Image (cartoon, rainbow, N blue to C red; front, side):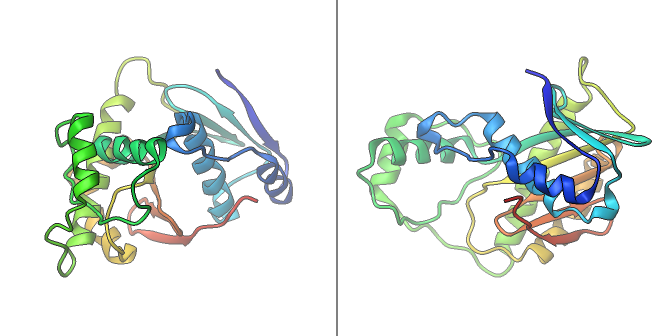
Length: 233
């Protein structure tokens, strides 16, 4: 339901209000819902962005189509959120958590954006066998990361231009990265993602795209900027 999340008159008050928010994200097997991840990401984004990119007083409201409205003097920003995670991987992780008899350490699987949905039997079999696969060479992790992020941005572009989706003076997208890969150099990966975003026309729909990874937020408005992630707590 739409509703006010926070109001802040100053940067110090914003930090205080962010620290008060409940941004816990349950396990997939413990009734995780989209609003848990959305709040987690928006709180980290506002904590991480340089204060010069914000103006005060500001209010953050939970909405729908897009997920948030950030109202600031002279500018209203619609912010949409999406999680970049393969459906089969999310389901497999749910099974690991729920059934709780497989090892906590396992090989990172190869996945492709948009791959067909697997049955529970197939997923259980893959978890049990835990095949190592062919591995990654050179910049393959960075190339695959860029392709996966572009895939999810493109999907959100369709939603953000559909009937019933509200548009504002500025429109942002947050992509929460849960794509399974070995260690990724996000500076290199961001340089690979940049032309893919241009190819799909992402900036005709979103003025800024933020990819939230484990320790950084990658900002795309042109030349990528890699921000060290700041905890709102």
